[in-house]
Length: 320
Image 1: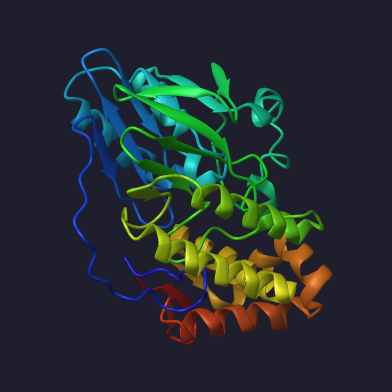
Image 2 (image 1 turned 135 degrees about the vertical axis):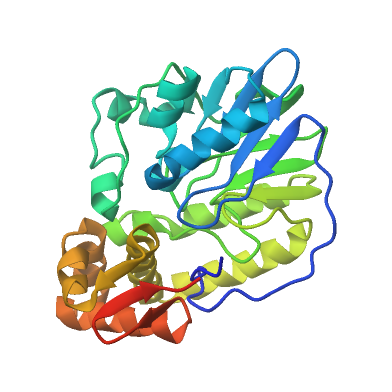
């Protein structure tokens, strides 16, 4: 898969050093429409971290069920509640009757299913309604795969995001707080809230941990933690120096997500689809201040330029 990365440029191939997971862990690398899933299996218990996007839910259930080999899934844990990380929750609950654990700060929004507070409506994305059984918060300890994982607050990309760190295994499950080349869109800034400072603080938190392996929310696990941190720091400095850059990146990412979900969109429909997304409108109102059809045309051109989309003059077609 070759999606548009956070910089808006095509992902560059790299030769990664081999990494080794504890025998109780498996990583399902899913791409960019669905987040990665991390499965833990011990004789005592099983658990899954993050569930992918809803249009991949049947595949998620099949992957997990196959790996479990007839065992039940005891627990599902979400690092944060963006649709690409929790869109498979409902399907997993129905198929595997798993106990579900979410960030504590999202409990009220899930209990009352406030789609605006949960970001689904704001991003123009789907997420079938799901329930939860308990919550986790920064400072908690979470037993997964026979290991103890520290739950750490990781705001920036999402104000309620969490990461999981195992000191014994020197592994960080970083979700969208740190990728090999960047991090997730700093969405709070589009709404006029603070996000750049929180992103920096989260990166410094990660820098203070003894980490040998990062399992990101998207992309392959990686061991060059210092290199990733250096790239992420440069990225946040670049975005914070001119918030228009963050807004432009968000517009491209929102369109790319629609394209990943649908695989092709009529060019004539792109302006209307984007105009229905609240964060597109907010990014434009606060920072870009362009006619919506002109901004949509710009986003299409950017995806094509980056090699993330193609067009036959009628349809915009996803290109991986």
